[in-house]
Amino acid sequence: MSRPSGNTRLKAARLAAGYNSQQALADAITKAAPKLGIRGLAVGVRQIRRWESATPPWPQPDVHRVLTHLLGQSMVDLGFTPPWGSTRTQPSTAIDNTPRASLSGARLASVPAQGGAPTQPATVGRDFEAVTRSHRHLYWSVAPAVLHPAVLEHARLGCALLPETANPARQTLAAALAESYLLAGRIEFFDLRQPDQAAETLLRALQAAGEADDPLLGAAILTHMAFIPGWAKDREAAIERMLAARTYARRGQASGEFWAWLDAVEAECETRCGDPHAALRLIRHAEDTLSTNSEHATPEWLDWFSPVRLSAFKGNTQLKAGHVPQARQTLHEVLDGLPPESDKQRTVVLGDLAAVEAADGRPEDACRYAIQALDQLAITWYATGMDRIREVRRTLAPWQNEQCVRDLDDRLYDWGTTVSALQR
Image (cartoon, rainbow, N blue to C red; front, side, top):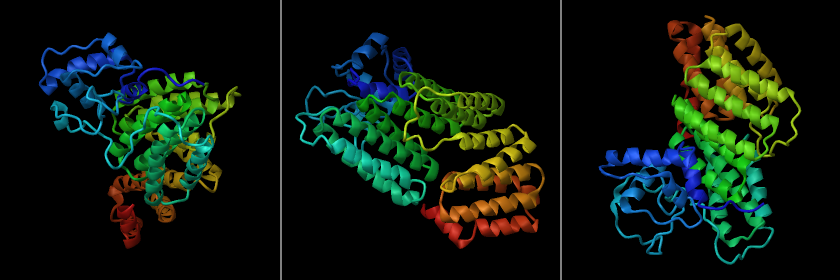
């Protein structure tokens, strides 16, 4: 498998920012320029094509000021080589005062392009991949605040090794690096509730997937990127990222399970953006997809999805659609079917069951499920699960003087839970 040609860094950043075509980015640059005080700037698709070629020319100062504003990275990180040669001592330009000009600070290492003469052995890719795999398994049991820095340091090591490694080991290493950044982004978004940092980290993951020329990993990363605007109720941005993800999935010969997961994520975005009925249609399509035999295998790293987790998506969507009895039945089946290692997902399902009972006017049952979720969170922290409990507590306001709700408050705001939530 040959490396992708052209400036894959700019292509990845364009897609990550929601510009699915070169024309879309050209139009955005032209439109954004006046807002930055730049007059008379017009960029066409031909210019974007030159920038995404293997030897992109260095843009004029006004142009790269708009580019970095729109894509959130420095010109070097976008794959351009400065005409003065050094990437460390750049002359002062208007871009230096742009707040979003560079995302490659001390926290994240940049994903390097192909370097000079390789010095690493042929085994380096598999060795690095073995640690990535171990981190992926540890995600389900290790506290996120403990695992996260280890994953980032491992990714930093991968960035240092990449220029010193020749193909085919380099592609193996780049794919494992993409997985590491993807895992770090998942922890930041789902466990630590840091969507801005997650967006930055997932962009690094997409760059690494481009270096590996792995379209399925690219599709998985773009799908995770859709969660961020989806949860912020920005439907247009979420759907654009899902469109890009589906395009990459077609290139990578995705399995039926992979396609069903894409439907499930898009369904959750639709639910959070206020259209649970569209979400239910997507979930039915996902169920149909899972019921047919797939000619392609599911990647080993896709360990966050299964038929029972699709049902968990379905139960939450049924609840948001007002189908309370159906949601109760679905979520009970999910709770019975979750494997023992799915403690994080269990907190979410218990929270949804609490929400079902609150919606049905049964505060005692709602509080019982919520307290069970809190008991699980004390063992395995998951910010998404805690969000569910806090949402349930808000819906219990009409019964806040009931003893069961007061008991829930005592548990929700006891010393252990409060400190645990703040320190993680």
